[in-house]
Length: 144
Length: 100
Ligand SMILES: Nc1ncnc2c1ncn2[C@@H]1O[C@H](COP(=O)(O)OP(=O)(O)OP(=O)(O)O)[C@@H](O)[C@H]1O
Ligand SMILES: [Mg+2]
Image (cartoon, rainbow over the protein chains, first blue to last red):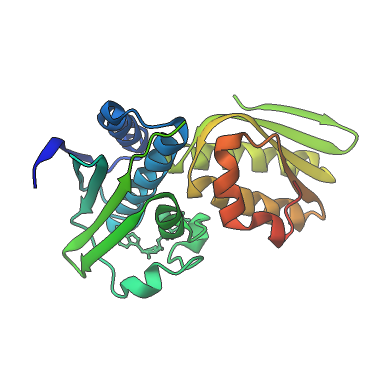
């Protein structure tokens, strides 16, 4: 598979970097000329995944968050967001709407539901004690 | 920092910018301190100047719904920009009792 473009970044999981990650991904997909709605969908999904690395993956520690993004020749954007944190024991359960392990922090348990509704594909893999990786994919139609 | 307005027992909070996990704690603290000192009958969150919101914003809304409920008030969210309406609808906050 040939990619039109790709990029790789890593940054410490400080909450100020949530906005940074959104800006970087917006800039990256711009060459596909997405609509404002498509761009908003991608930014929101990335924000969810990055926030999960920070809030759940590393909890009170600061660990590195990794983003690998690609643009395919058929105008799909594929974004992998990874942490080396605590991992998820039961992925199916974690992805259920309203499920959260951080209710006392006012989390709604909607992050995965948002990713699934705003992107075409969401793939999660995780190993307890090793970390979590979320791959998001969306076809940029850019019809206005 | 946060713009508010109080009249006729309604406390209006004008939210702005990007609402994410990074900003949610500060916004929550300043709204809650006003709820607890003013004890309004209704809290209204105005979203007209909000450019971005993820599920941290949904947690913020539900948390304020509970906070104002504790003192017997209700919560209304208003002026939701077009680009936020999908996440608001997906969250189902209005079916849980939040007014819109
Ligand atoms: N990167 C991660 N590392 C470890 N656990 C995770 C990770 N991402 C998600 N989880 C687990 O999956 C649950 C559901 O995640 P989801 O994003 O759907 O909801 P939330 O983060 O709890 O709440 P919200 O996203 O609405 O603020 C989390 O509560 C957490 O237990
Ligand atoms: Mg989340």
